[in-house]
Length: 283
Image 1 (spheres, rainbow, N blue to C red):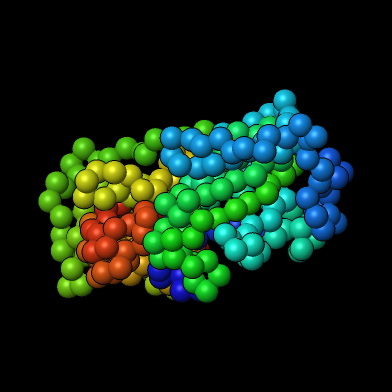
Image 2 (spheres, one colour):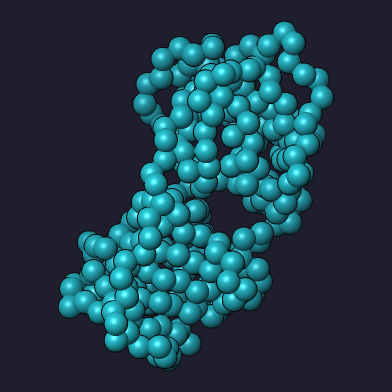
């Protein structure tokens, strides 16, 4: 996996398989090899939402429904239009747990329609999945994705937080480095500075020229840690310019970001990226 092509936070924190034990719940347990039973009166037809997502509830539940920031534990099976299975937690014999806002949009939306203990079938158009590019070699471009998902548990997510204070005398103008990176220090700090080999813990917000936010740890309510060598070059360079406890704003040209191709559907081709970052810790 080429981490320099992966979105910060949203994709650096990709699904991690959980090894935690899970009690029996509607026949979907840690050792399940197939989905549990559907309701006898489960609908045959799908409901289509405004986004284009199609879903049908295969097993109803009046228990807690997740919100986008919550963490969910699920068993699932995913296949393509032709019926080819591309992923299955049932085959691995263990469920998976992840924050709902860190996966494809079709999952983030779809899992909010089912209660804990329930089961849903999703039909996700490519615009809510892996886009025009797909995720080769497993997911071809413009693929419609199909999933059966059993919602085993819901853990309420952290509350959103706001960025910290900016210095009263913080500069308004950006400094441009030899690479073309632009930056300005929003809160000075004499704390430890990172090296390219460091691991950093940060809170951040990222937006496009249009002002649209594409990622924010503040919105998720929790910071993220990662090695500086495994992110886009603009971050590797920029985070070495501020001390621990400080805040920096970065303007990253596409050559130091996601290149000419971008990272559709989130990052357009040749996109300039803007970030506000607080450096919480250097390891």
